Length: 232
Image 1 (cartoon, helix red, strand yellow):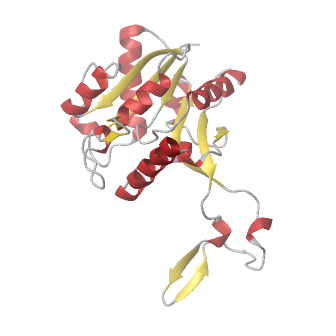
Image 2 (cartoon, rainbow, N blue to C red):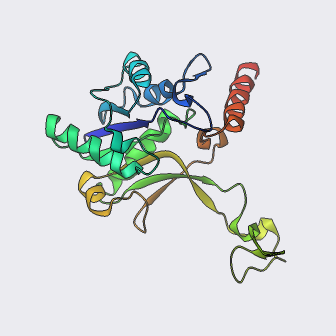
């Protein structure tokens, strides 16, 4: 099976400026994801889609393919991740031929393990590439314990919730963690989504692996995780 790994890395991060190339544990954040997918037999290339010359330079130095800077229209706040995926996929297949899958890896998940990537590919292959795969982590807060403000009142976010049920008696809830998405090109072009009723869940129980860095708080957690690994 031939799979193209795609790492989207826009330069204009507002909450954590230049986060994709900030040094974490001695190397740029994006390099963690590039290194995680290297030497995976099914991966034919690691393509980075970015609008930043600085990110492009760092990614190339780490061993990724960065053949162009993405068009301005794909670098706005309104551009979707699927727009970025299909732009890269169309370019790659036109130049190098068809692939069996597109593996989307966000650079904000630095602790994603090589074995997790392997499991995701195996899950994809076990269904002959007919169903997309996405990674999920246990939810920090169960949806039954979420509320909304209605005027001066608090109401359960979900209707019909029994608030007397103990949290340990509630069923497990999971959230998309953004660490891994994998889908067949024809499926993605038709559905324009990795997430739907056909999606195969790749469950990641490890909290560090499920970390998605978006804010300074998240960054501090990532550094804390590394410090714990060093001292343990």
